[in-house]
Image (cartoon, rainbow, N blue to C red; front, side, top):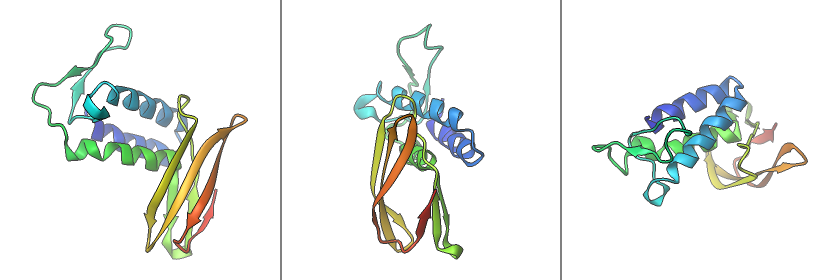
Amino acid sequence: MWPHDNSIIVLGLAKYGYTAHVKKLVSALFASAEQFEASRLPELFCGYDNQQEETIIPYPVACSPQAWAAGTPFAFVHALLGLLVDSHKSMMKINPTLPDDMDWMECKGIQVGKGFIDITVKKENEEIVFAIANNTSGLEINR
């Protein structure tokens, strides 16, 4: 299993609105990362059905750290936030989601253009809500 390939898949699923699939893949890969030293995803690893094996099987020659795999969590955050920036219209859309096993996410200092934004996403009464604590990007932010 190549984490970076799955990050590309997750970004595509998010782009086309397959939120349930995004949540399932992100949750599974975050759980996989917990089985590696420092929760660091390696270049690739092997695994079997969760009911058959309790642990992930390391691939003997996989690099860790590895640049492609290191970018995977950032792609997941992008997909979970549902970010879409339209610099021509000076606006950004945010359509966040969270996996079932995650109640909140806070991202500070996300660079957008020449500025930054801070976003907090959380579950409230079965809904996903977000708040912008800081926006120096100059962009209008909508859902």
